[in-house]
Image (cartoon, rainbow, N blue to C red; front, side, top):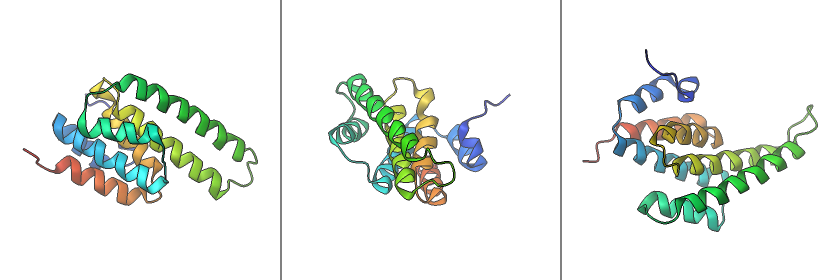
Length: 148
């Protein structure tokens, strides 16, 4: 029986591409998805630069960067909940903060030592996007690419 991924809830085709991809293709797709999410959400900061550097080049203290990202996610989530307390209206500011939190979560999942978390990074990156259809297409193209 095939394990269901959160990607299945966004795109069955993308989830299928993820399952068929090798580890290198998955990591390539995670990097592409995270870069897309960071750019589209406007997420910036030293911890973001450090995370992107580690995704591109490896090495470094990934655990320390993940901890910093986890703190940022906590702050952004709290800010989002504060901004969206009024259930009748969620402001564009609240949605932007939500997207930034999801982009940071994508980076944190991407830096996990567990390769089983890579699909979570792609999922969070897509949720962070202001154009989820475009984010799905970009992730799917990266998963299908042959970089050997």
